[in-house]
Image (cartoon, rainbow, N blue to C red; front, side, top):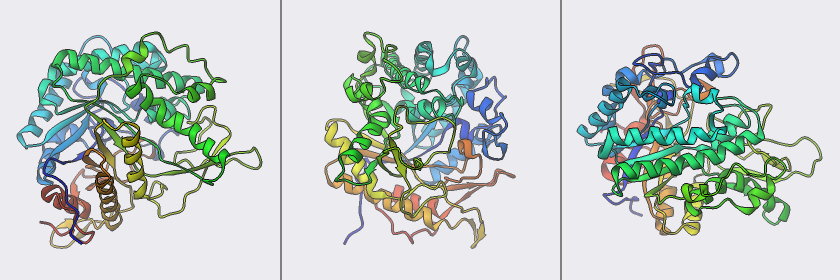
Length: 478
């Protein structure tokens, strides 16, 4: 059988996020974000780790662009730190912060790499959180003003404008379970945040298009969940799947792509809210034409109806907390998954990616897709000297290989998926897990900040430069 190949126009990239890699937390006029506050709060992150220095990308971006170029990538997906370009989230913009991203964009273009920008990857300016954060409708309008300014400053140099990254995490982990910044544990706040994030997305797309015209390519990236019923023949378990699917997936897909909220979502959460924060005209704003829908995929979840007997299992892949990321879903439990697992404890199921992409095609047949994050954390910290310094990350190579193959199988079924971005370019600050979990295809020594290519980087370079899926053993430096 011949090796799987992809067309020349298929886009290979890698992705990062500002707070996870930049450092320079108090430099260049940057204001504090909710993640600065959260990570500096005792007990919120593993080992008390913060993003103060991270990978020091703020000072080393030129070196990192060189790595991207040498990897042969066609695109680089990075996020702009809102508090770096507008320290308070409203009011004056910071010319020095804007210049940092403008220089980065110019550097990428000079390297032959398409800049894919994410405007919000979780680092909300703290001043906005002090005024209510994403529970406050005004935050959506502040975000739109920020998006407009970025469109004016970066212009047509940006290949794709992504408004939000994983609003599920922002809303439910930040305001529901509290394991992410700002650390609130309120069901109502989580659902308010869901809507105001959707509204912010729509308003931002309007502003970007008003500045740049229809030539601007716009997107949103969602971490869409793949739920498996414990017993596929059980109506109760199927109902459990529908309930969490409404919260996790359709609460974003439906308003963004259809201009509605699902009736079952509103019904299921009626004990929490009447959704009166959704105002007339909002859903016309949330539904904006998207050039591509970003899809982040890592693992699947197995759920069943909880009848109230015994202890409810909550193996949903997220840290335990006093709150829940699943408001009004106390009758659903998440069961442990069979392995193998990554260092995050997440199960490895490439077929879930195929299923997800096919289901999106079935629901939204005219919507182009792009896998904007896929990758795995493994314990691969040993640097060996085999002529050159490198890290043998066999498990990650296999993970990437099998998921790219799964994406290829979706394309075989006619799914219009146009690109793949490996998460992540660099080992980095993994949110509440600090520096303990390594997702990078490039290793970062957190003492010296030295970058070392792992085998997965050499493997990914072969894929990106040949458009042909290498074998898992094809990891020698080219």
